[in-house]
Length: 50
Image (cartoon, rainbow, N blue to C red; front, side, top):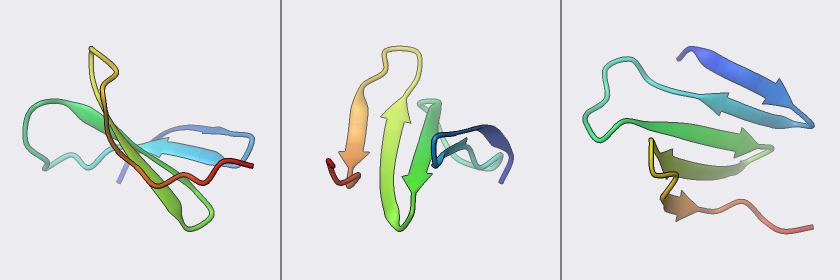
């Protein structure tokens, strides 16, 4: 899983073998989100607000 960015505890990454539409995954701790590109639509958001 290639990591695109590590910032303030957030890890932005993708899986090379995944299907369309193109998207990225975001993790912080055990929490997770999935965001479609290029429209930035949030598909899943399990990141907990502080």
